[in-house]
Image (tube, rainbow, N blue to C red; front, top):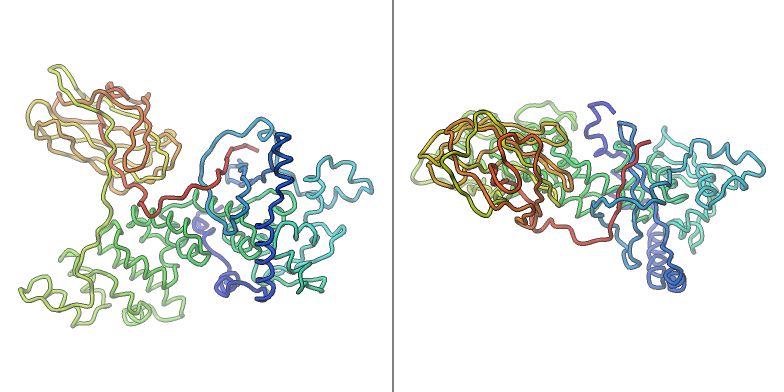
Amino acid sequence: MSSNNNNMYCKVSTATTNALQKRSTLSQQQQQQAEEHQQESESEPNVWANTLRQENGLQSPTPNLYVDNQDGSGDIIQITQPPSNSSVPTSPLTTHPLLSHHQAQQRPISFNNAKASTLDPNWQANKISIRERNAAMFNNELMADIFFVVGPPGGTQTIPAHKYVLATGSSVFHAMFFGGLAESEAQIEVPDVEPAAFLTLLKYLYCDEITLEADTVLSTLYVAKKYIVPHLCRACVLFLETSLTARNACLLLSQSRLFEEPELMSRCWEVIDAQAQLALNSEGFTEIDMDTLKQILQRESLNCKESVIFQAALQWAAAECKRRSLEVDSANCRTVMGDSLFLIRLPTMALEDFANEAAQSGILTLQETTDVFLYYTARNKPSLLYSCKPRAGLKPQVCHRFQSSAYRSNQWRYRGRCDSIQFCVDKRIFIVGFGLYGSSNGSADYSVRIELKRLGRVLAENHAKFFSDGSSNTFHVHFEQPIQVEPDTFYTASAILDGSELSYFGQEGLSEVNASNVTFQFQCSSESTNGTGVQGGQIPELIFYGPSPQSQPQKQQVVEISTKVE
C-alpha cells in the first residue's frame, strides 16, 4: 500500500456515507421484523445444545479473523461468541494469549478455487468438514437461489448466494427471505455497499473467516451493522483500534460518530488529547465533518497551544472551500467556518502568537482584532465572543519505580555511558518524558540525551539540559511530542547524562508498579552499560499521559489473538 493510503481505511464511499446517514436502505417493516426475530432468538437460547456441549466437554466453535499485512504475514484472531443478551456489537479487548495446538494448526481456507473445486460431480467427497463444504459455496453460482447486484451505478458486481446460509447468520437476511415481507425477486440491488465489503461479509457467514484490509474495513463495518452481524462489527473495530495513530485519529473519530461506536470514539479522543498537535496537523483533520470539527475545537483537554488549534482550523476551512468549489480566501474561510470560529480561545494565545498569526490572518474583523488586543493590554477589558478560559489540557502522571534513593562517594558516575531500562504496560499510554536523578555533590548543570525504542527501533529522542540543586529530587526531561505506547510490548527507555560525576541513584526497585490504573512491568536492558537495572540506578520515573477515566473500557468477552506467517 502506498504512502498516499495512510488514512485510506478511514474513508468510506459517498454512497456508503449517505446511506449510513439515512440509517438503512431496508424498509422500516423489514428492519422491525429483523429486530423482533433477533429478540426472539435471544429470549429462547438453545439450552439443550449448550448443556449437551458442557456434558461432553465440548466448546462452541469460534470464527477466525485473518488480517492481511503488507509484509505478507497474517493474523489469526479467535473471537469468542458474544453472550445471548448482547444485541449491540461492542469493542473487544486486545489481549494476546497463545492459541491451543489445534487452533494453531488450523489454516484459513483458500477461496481462490472455490468454483473450480465443485466442477467435479463428486466434489462433496473431497470436503471433510462442513466448513470446507460451505467454503466451496462461497461466491459460487452452484445451487445459488439469490443474486445481489452490489455497488453504486457504474461499479456494480453481481454476487451469488444461498438464502439458507445468509438467514442462519443474520436476522436481517432471515426477515428478507423468510419473514412476512420476504423478497420475491431473484435479484436484489444493494447500491449502498461496496462489493469488496459485501464479499467479506459473505465469507464470514459461510465459514467464520474474516479478511480485513485497511481500505475496506470501514465499508465492512457498515455492511456488518446494516445486516446486524455483531461479531464482524467487533472484528472491524478491533482492526481500527490497533491501527489508530495521531495521523488518522481525527478522521476516524468522524467516522466512528456515524457508526455509533462509543468505544472507538473514546480511543480516538485519547490519541487526539495526548498528541493534539500531531493530530490537528494531520491531513485527516482537514477531511472531518463540521460537527466533528466543533467537538474538537471545544475540547477542554486538548494538549497543545491555542495557536496550533487556530492554524489547524484555517487549514480545515481552506479544504472546505475546495470541497464547496469556492475560492480559498479569508472571506470564504470565515463563511465556511461559521460559528465554529468562536470555539477557538483567541484571548488565551500568547500575545506574540496572536499578533503574528491570528491578527494578520484576515479571518477576524477589525473590531474583533482590536478587542482582543485591548483584552491583553487594557485595564478595563472589553467583552468578547471568544472564551477567555485556557484549556485544561492533560495532567501528566508519574510512575515511580524505586522505593528510596541514596548516594555514595564513589558512585553514581557517567562518563558517556548509557543508563537503560525496559518496561511494558497493560493499557495504551503516551510517554511524555523521564524523571532523572541529579548531583549528590552540590548544584550542577547536566546535558542529557533521552531515547525511547521499540524492538531496537528509535521512536523518539531528545537532547535537553537541566539544573540539579543538589537534592535527591528528580528532574523531568521531556520529549518534543508524547509517544504512543501500546500494551503488552516491551519498550526501552535510555538516558546518557553529561555533568557532575557523582549523583543520586535509586534502590529497592520494583519489577511491577501500578500508577493511575496502569500496570508497569520492568526488566533489565542489555543496552544499559552504566549499571542501571530493575533493582537500582537511574531513570527513576516515567512521565506519561494515561487513559482518561471516562474512556476506560468495560470488561467484555476475550478476543484471543495469535500471529501466523503465511
